[in-house]
Image 1 (cartoon, rainbow, N blue to C red):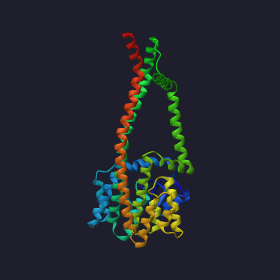
Image 2: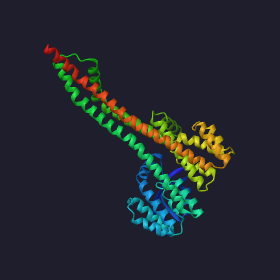
Image 3: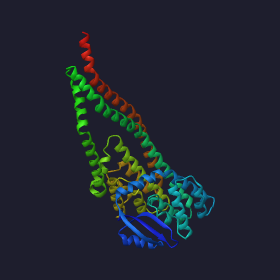
Image 4: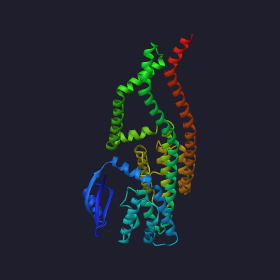
Length: 403
């Protein structure tokens, strides 16, 4: 399937702009026609364009939580859907989301279901979100679906905040140190070289190494920076255009010290959380597995999860398929097996979620406690080397003069 960015118009003349997946332009045209929309124009967009949508989606996560909270409470007290959507205009949400809400309100006024109206905006409401709302519409308990989505969105937001908190300090401090280092190497070190030459001082090995680095940055710094940018851009392009390269790169992320294993556990927890949520709403096991896969953004891990779903489709028990996979521990398959045999699979999934959340929180705390002092010691040692390399030859020469 390809992703198309399209512009369409309805019978009232309202313009809709969004992104949808379809096999071809014709399939997109037929899909929109079935929803009383006339396709004006469309173009295929590639994966790198979706990064903008992902960033936008992270920025409006607070707005989505407000939306779900409002809709859950309105449905719980029996407020009609259209009236609840109309009240969203008075909430402090982003202008872009408010405009989408106006479009959704107009679509539902024309007889469209809420889940179908939300599906026109996949850059905000993903397939998982829409499926939960659709199942809640079928059961007549819309507030339960919104309650589950609130839990999911809050957990995602909290995890994202913890990761940012763990990486923000070292990234900022590292950036300041690197900038300071480059300024010193390009301004102060050349002056130091001239001063040492004027005094006929033979610099030690540490100072010679510092001078060599300074010469490299001055002569080849721009070329080196251009190469790095070109290399990163090439890797990003290959990641978007080649599925095999994307799998290898995604798999290599799990081997980054400290961060890689933690990221893998977060993705697995997200998978189990989505599986538990979809099963609890009445979605069958195969559809639940498919929806849960969409919550995992890593292609290497998603490929393994698709293999598990294919085995379950072939008649294998979920615990057996998990046991044959290399991404889960043996304890995971044993717990799933006990849940299947006792008919308490949902309860077992909740227990597994709890243990994974506890383990992830402990690892995040360790990461924060380890990175900050480790980074301070590293920077301290680096600054000692820099000061010794710059000032030791001068101090040594002055001590000889005093003698």
